[in-house]
Amino acid sequence: MDPDGSGSDGRALRDVLHKRADVFRALEASPASKPELVDRLSSSRSTVDRAIDDLADADCVESRSGTYSLTATGRFALAERDRYAAATRTVEAASDLLNGLPEGTTLPSVFLEGATVSVADPHAPSSASTASSRLLGRATAMRGLAPTVLKSDVFIIDRELDREDLEVSIVAEPAVVEALSELSDTPVATLLARDSFDLYRSAGPLPYALWVMETPDADRAGITFRGTGDVTGLVTNDSPEAVAWANAELASYRERATPVDRPV
Image (tube, rainbow, N blue to C red; front, side, top):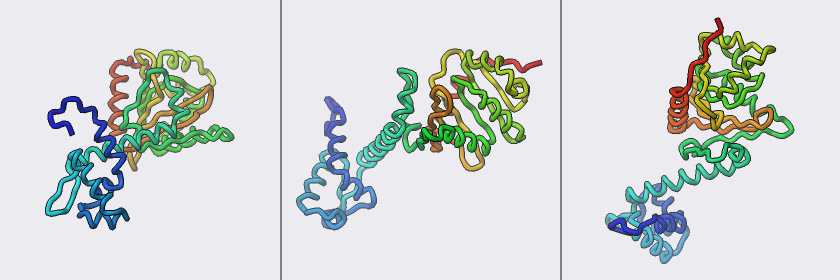
């Protein structure tokens, strides 16, 4: 390691995390002596000796009476590696969806780690929108950003708001607010008149259709992706960290938005 912190870029730690991942995992499960590691890993004693030396050089293990365990450095490093792996799995699975985001848009690792990716079947393009509608059907509250709007959105939200236990708050782009007034063959007026529905005009463009839905089971954050028509996919995450990020993001956009007056 680099005791005084000068010139360290974390490369040595990344290398040992990759090269000695099996020993990290074995010691994460429980402390062990070298003979126990030989048995657990089905490795030679010389291989275990070299692995322990590498982990010790990186300050990732400590020994007490011949029993080795991960240090705080080792545990933190392994946790960060796992978070990175979970986030990159989501990025890979959602690659086609993420490439449709505006240039320069970023998403935090807390939203990507362990997220569920649902891509619409080309032969059943409504499958992804059906999944989000089912989630809304169980929700008691929904907050979201609307960079686009479809007629079906108005019908779905208006129908679900017939339930007295649901409240919906949407921050929409100015063009979306204007478009709503032109959807004469939809229940826009009914929707806007509902006390359980709040609409806000955003201060500028919105990068994604981010939302949080609260259900009796758990709160879930998500981003809905759309092509030229129906929903092309969803990325959702119910971890407390992902939901907290999404709620903070939604609150930030709402603070800068302007309430849309209800029809008289």
